[in-house]
Length: 101
Image (tube, rainbow, N blue to C red):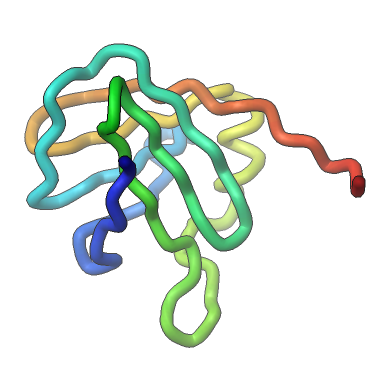
């Protein structure tokens, strides 16, 4: 089951336009078969089996911690890079519907 990661251990950046999530003090068992869901308030990085992470996108004051251009970069790259304890993961972005039900 995905676990919440303390916001102090998460950094969202754009590295040369590539959306990157850096997780500090977080271990992963494999760099294979990861996916990513980008939402306005929460990010889900889902790995193999029960491995995965839930990341808050808003700080305590309700401000978005993602850098300007984050959503466009995720859409254009179709993935995010996750750096966790020396492991580089490429998580494929899942399709998002913008239509209301």
